[in-house]
Amino acid sequence: MKIAIIEDDAETRSYVSNGLKEAGFMVDSADDGYTGLLLAKDGGYDVLIIDRMLPHLDGLTLVKLLRGSGCTVPVLFLTTMCGIDDRVEGLNAGADDYLVKPFAFSELAARVNALLRRPRATVELNLLQVQDLEIDLLKRLVKRNGQVMELQPTEFRLLEYLVRHAGQVVTRTMLLEHVWDFHFDPKTNMVETHISRLRSKLNAGGKPDLILTVRGAGYIIHETG
Image (cartoon, rainbow, N blue to C red):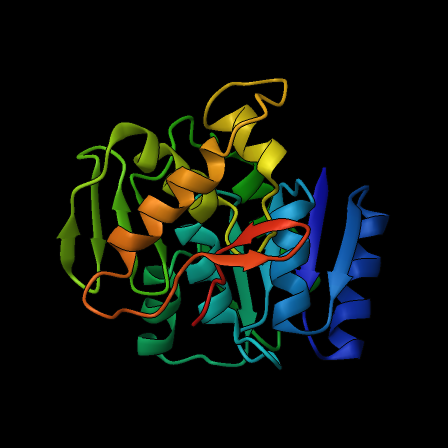
């Protein structure tokens, strides 16, 4: 089993990491929220242990971004923020459990094991969110800043793929494979044409550009504006 610890306090991070390794887990760690977000999205973890008060990107926002991108990995908040409102806020943000510092390692290990015993979700989250954009996967509905947009099926698939990979550069080849199911280059400007049409709809009314071009690489939707 693989666990990520996102904690800026070096002593706590080392204590938890060493304890989990002794218990037989593989452990990676990060000491700030932004690095932790990249780690959590790319590492294939079974549990994420996250502090709420992190530099660069706070734990609450980190979890919201993960859930908005479709990540269903169980999250345990490990924090000094002990009020009832703090706990409710953390759980409502998408955390599965909440443990207050100071803590006994035996309790932390028990909570991790309890999360691991839970059946993992077999369905995707129905709602994807990034910046002011919302995608309802069940209703096939797209809203930007609360305004509904009419998209063609291919445009919807294209936007969904870009949003699921928010914060990452998506190449033309990736889009051809995952949106059009092409495993060869058709030597057309199909991708560029659909990106242009999608941008026109997303940016209607003078809204700022959501899909950015990375010259020589591909396209990216940033997780925060």
